[in-house]
Amino acid sequence: MLIMRPTVSVIIPTYNSAKTLRACLEAVYAQRHPTTEVIVVDDASTDETRAIAGDFPCRLLTADQNMGPAAARNRGILASTGEMLFFLDSDCAPEPDALDNALAILRDQPDVACVHGIYALRPMFDDGPVEAYRLLHGHYWRLRNVGRVRTTLFAVCVTRRVAFTEVGLFDEKLRASEDVEFGDRLAQRYATVLTDTVVCRHDDDSHLGKLLRKQFGRSQMLVPVALAERGPAGIRANGPAGLLTALLVPLSVPAVLLGPLFLLLPVGFFGLFAAADPGLLRFVLRQRGPGFAAFFFGVHLLVQLTIAAGAGVGGIRHLLDRDFGPTRLPNAELPR
Image (tube, rainbow, N blue to C red):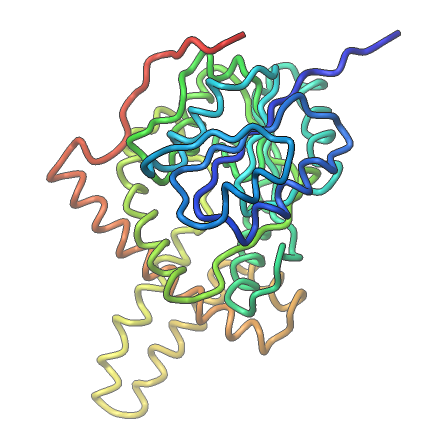
């Protein structure tokens, strides 16, 4: 019996991705499952991104001004023809079996409309310890949540076209958490699976300052998106215990002025912070040893404090301006 393979459109939103786009596209064309088309949506890049895309037999869509990943993905969706849409961030290189494995889940579980995967521990390019921190943490919390989830993450993700036909496109107001907001709407109709069988190498932030600035900006949408969620909270990369103990570290620092003995307070709270997620602590120790674990949790502390600050600022902005946050999109009629 001949089984017809579904048609697949690959959609890659990109902005100033000259460093990574070639590796991303090479990985796309090395997929074991054939793709119908590859669409690169350039969001007004100013580097060599478009020239690199021109070296591949893909379709390049360009924008005159930067509109963000939600708008870029929407443009790719509307231009595509495949029954299945394979979304990739341009700093991701999927393993050769990634698409095959995602399609197998969609074939075997008809109520599932979206399958997304995890980051490999091996980076696309090795850019140092900050990137190693990011990949370790990103791999761990995704692996911890493998199974049926309410959250969609579109770094490496395969989705049925019908999902967008029935629940609408990405909210273009959002430049962060747009995939989380989409997943909340999708959960009203279909299931989503996070799997460790769909793996990609990722080029992550390697400079601490850039990482913290990005986290601060993105976390401002945490409160508005959470308040708009229709169902229970989905995947959370960071638990409340970690955030709480992270805040106790700087709050206890002024006590050191009372005497050297009080140095034990911030040191003790830092220890509680590192132990707040025992699974993460064991994972980092197992992967990289105690020396790197000390570095890991030092950076992790700064990231958690930045996320808390960004979430607080975002919550205040949402209180002052209810237009700051997601909107509910009407259903969009997509090409069939």
